[in-house]
Length: 290
Image (cartoon, rainbow, N blue to C red):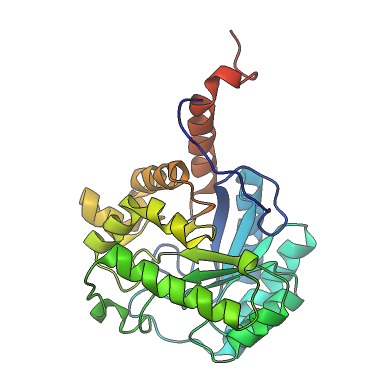
């Protein structure tokens, strides 16, 4: 073995037996997400896209009905449920592992009832006062993402003394609060929240030093796909032109032991990770002909 390509999970995430990082495919059922907003607002289109991502190798499908891009407004729980429940139910009925991307307890409850097996909350269960108790009652993993403020004002809240240490400290506090609130620690996954209340430089610094987050003792999710910090690093204004940078970020995250990479471009990411693993473990790879 030339490098440590993955860290074997002590317990599977959402029952998935596969090497880390697991590839989570993004399904936005929204009119205004930063990269693909409005493309799959129709339920049938979103379901078809989720099936395509699963066929391309996504082992988790993350369904979101509210954009949380900087400047986005809030969506009611009723509207969000109307967007995501048909998609979650159809994909879960297909047998796929579905995650719901929401910060609202009512949506979390509805999604799990419809078949979702994971919750992904950008506010680390802080936005909705009912969400922590609800998640404690559910037997599903939850992603605690670091953020500050709301999508409308988060980019005014980028003051940190040391962005890596400060984000780690905030996540450690949320882990402690969740455990104290009855959420089993082995159901917690952490996400440093690249681009959420962070400048491009701060997001890059977090990604560069993500290995430090293993000290918190929870699996790590990295969501770098198509984000603006990649555009800043590569002078690429359009999200449509950031696939190479997104692949580089996913490979870096995998090398640093991330448990999950959350991406728009599933097939490309899966292929890149397969080559990475093959090269790291080439001496024992029986699939390579002499």
